[in-house]
Length: 194
Image (tube, rainbow, N blue to C red; front, side, top):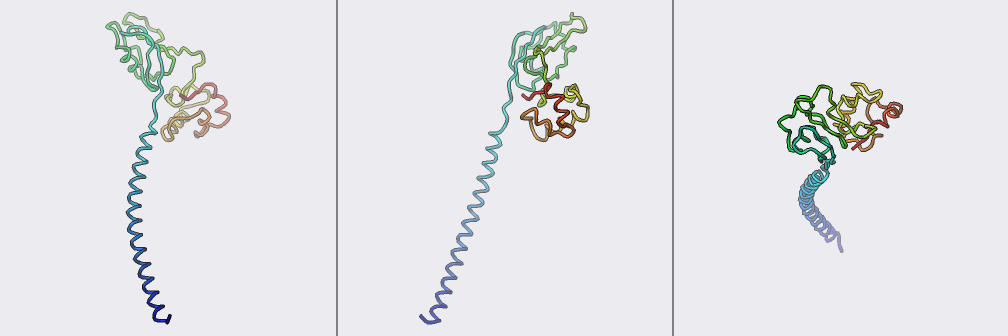
């Protein structure tokens, strides 16, 4: 082979390589676009599948209620939800004495008073002997009942929960600013996660 033929083969080879690369780049772009759509759809499906299913709780409701007894609710439900689930109140009920917005916990007993009841009746009872604060649903006021937890620390717990989601274990509370090992040791027997 002479030099002229070698140069022609090199030119033809280079042209073929350029055409091949150009065609493959176009295919790759289309593939990447389709892959992006697939990833977006997969992320949406994963997000929908990871929506947390709320736990059920059981409470006992008595007093001036149409269907007193044991009812099943969803964690985070309030006394108003319990009243509705139990068929509403009777005509003798005095709901002004009950905090309808109170968030219920598993095992509580609710008494809906009569208009004839005297003041000082306890309307909500927790039937468990050792009442534990659920750090996933507790209000600021409930958190402040814990030993050594003041207003700012209670607010930090709520902010942490809002930013990071539900606590998976009581020990995770140590990730909250202001709660170290010693403070956690004081409250660990009084808290739970549900």
